[in-house]
Length: 179
Image 1 (tube, rainbow, N blue to C red):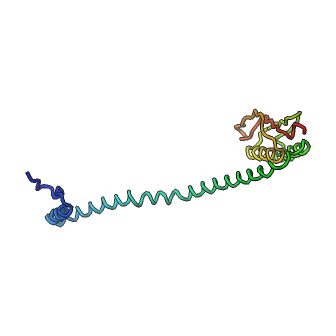
Image 2 (image 1 turned 90 degrees about the vertical axis):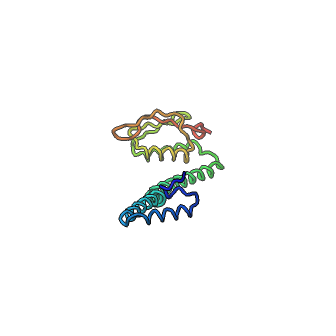
């Protein structure tokens, strides 16, 4: 039983193309025009979904991705500089107690009055009062690099109103042990 209703059921591609052409020729000019318009719309839709839309999305997302990667690169370069500075210091002797105390005082001045340092034995305690996060981060970095002290204990909380840190931060290390 041969199926003559559908011209697209032929096994050979050239036969199928010839049958589709014959079927299209058998249509009235108005129907032929509508079929060609429908095929064009479907083809353009497929072109949009497969080729244009993904490329368009990539182009629109590229500036944000570029900015994020630039920021990440800047952070990595800063960390590399810090690591290099620490590597250079590791070959030298740790600072004396007096040098470490001077470095602590110099770093505390950068807190702008929101922090007060007190030294007792082998530990230094920093009392914080609404200290901005950036200032605290800079203080920690200066103390780690210049005085070679690390945080030992912290009891800090973030003030919701000012966004600053309040509490105490204890640092210690070999320089305060009193060589």
